[in-house]
Image (cartoon, rainbow, N blue to C red):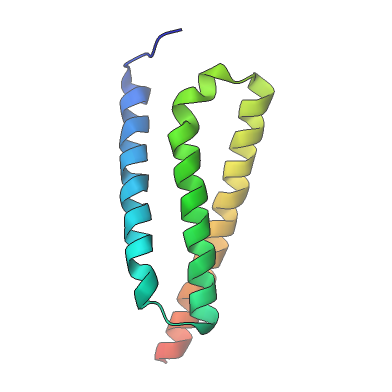
Length: 100
């Protein structure tokens, strides 16, 4: 089975590149984040970004997996994406509370 260089391939490659850039950004900001609740939330977000980056790097190999495994991976991506959104919103609320 060869690699198909079609539009989804290039979109996936762009998503991987953006995710890797985001990973470097989140790691670079880590030393500037204070401890406490904000620091704890940032550590959770960092872990989720690492998890998503690993997942994005694995997407070129999804074609080699059985359909049920691919469905499970996507279900986990949706779950952890939802967790990421909730943690991010809570972090923004904490930052707004600190600034107010």
